[in-house]
Length: 310
Ligand SMILES: Cc1cc2nc3c(=O)[nH]c(=O)nc-3n(C[C@H](O)[C@H](O)[C@H](O)COP(=O)(O)O)c2cc1C
Image (cartoon, rainbow, N blue to C red):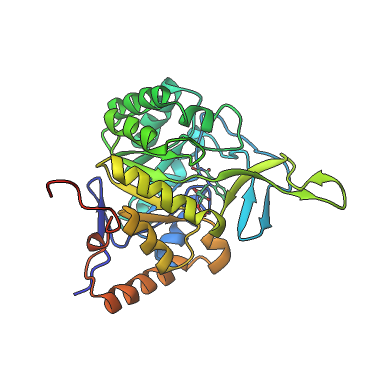
């Protein structure tokens, strides 16, 4: 019997596809739609901060070759106004796990926000340590293993639900950041966030995004994400959620084989519609049937060389 269920850090997912942070994740109703018509196995909220923010001006999302470039600037309603959205998902979501994503300026702010999110009833915390286009809130923090360690330790000591750290690929050694997360007691890794990028309009001699630079997502970054998950899986034992450029079941399977236990989909919603989660699951099933797999875990990490002594 084929089974798409997967389990990460003690959370059971009916299938291994999750909504990535920042796409349809700002209201309880849109999150519910992704669970119900979309078929996702778990949901991640938009990254929420201490205060409400309007984000950068338009244009803030554009299409580029094989991807999207966004500089949203972390628009969000602020933690005080987010309780109601989580309540809507918890009441209507049929038990589907919801991850509360947060961004903050330092360890104590992260702990404060995580405590509030956990109090609202989310099933896990996702720490956004990696936004490439909101100054003071992103990759500066996420590329320093000591700072990452302090943030994760603080949050783990504040909440009693699993804590995931979302990492940037724009560091020389992503596995060393993941090791810092593991040593600090983090329960899982999410990799990758977008990569800092830019598009110029030659006719007007100006960058297209109002913020000039943004984060690249979609198919263009999939090989980077797969590489990052492979490197992380070589060094840590905590579960990994792969994200970056997943449009098809085959894309998700690349991430499983690199070492991921589940995947998130963001830009794919733009390319294939809200029911991309159902489509990707059907394609994963088809591949498993054709190749004699019955569980996601049988594919996990199979491209890694066997460990000595095993
Ligand atoms: C419009 C947009 C908004 C995003 N907002 C967030 C966010 O608030 N927090 C976060 O951690 N990642 C955010 N991301 C990054 C995605 O969650 C994901 O890591 C990245 O886009 C790569 O996956 P994809 O290729 O499937 O989109 C955003 C991405 C896009 C395209």
